[in-house]
Amino acid sequence: MELRERKQNDESLKEKIKWQWQNRDFSPKKEQTSQFALYYFLTMFVLSLIESLFVLIPTAYQRHHRWIMTGSFVWVMFITLVNWHRSYFDTANYVKAETKQKYFADCTDTPQDWVHCFKCQVDRPPRAFHCDYCGKCMLKRAHHCFVTSSCIGFYNQKYFIMFSLWSVIASSWLVYLQLLYLNIVLPVSEASFIVYLPPVTLFKLIMGNITFGQAFVVAHLFMNIPMIITGGFFLFWHSLLSVEGATNYEAKQRKFPYKGTVNQNLKSVFGSVFYIPLLVLYPFRLEQDGDGILWKSRAKRVKGN
Image (cartoon, rainbow, N blue to C red; front, side, top):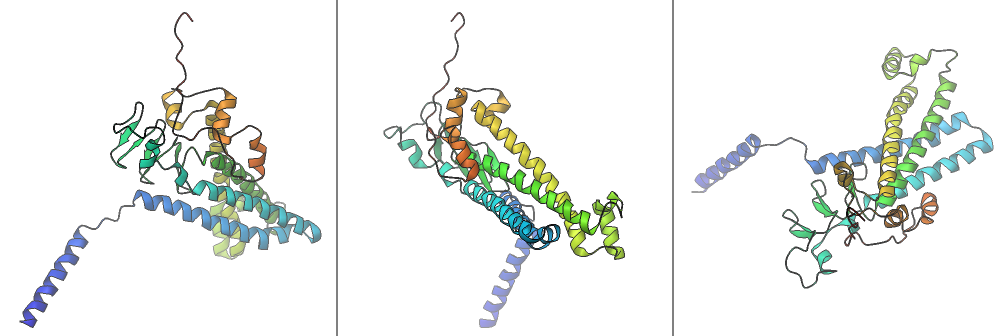
């Protein structure tokens, strides 16, 4: 009896393994894609910091200039990281079951202009949308950011704008330091500028003409340039959305039902125009106008008035 039961258990185990192998799915999930971009950013951030502090700045600067540049660059990287951290935590943007209770405590149906999300099983307010990557509905959702692995919405848009700004500054500064370093170890006067191209650099590395560290700086240089372009694009786009008081969806549809004056739009994002310089210096937690739930529709113009 024991041998028969053991044989049956072995056969059932083989069938389970066979079924799992036949029904395996190696396609990347949306959540995994977002996490990959997050880990890529953190890895590049750490490598950039180590490369600058221990290779680029010591090679390009001497004595007190070295310490001034080190302190300044660390501060820039620190501000960039803090703004990223504030953008990363988007839990305040989540639409919950309690969200409707704030203004419609006695309402059992979906309020006017609200939409019921069958995925989250909650009623979401105007300008809120569901994110398949986060699995949540977000207040005033702009888009999902893979670098922060979170949605950019009502409460963290101002931090994302500052993160884009400081990312451009940090990446541009890093490119400048990399060019200074390469001009010292691989002077353009002695070698053609073509040696800075990654395929040529790889060939030189294989031939033993340059070191691995020099080749890494060249490769990293060309990886930083897209970061500057991407950060500059998001900085411009979200600044434009803030001024116009719009979301990505409204901009694509060219419909702006909740657009106010420029001052009102900026207050909704930053809290006050005077808060913007403070947020540039440091991502303080400052209150902004509204709560991302209740929106006043712009009055429609009537012909003849």
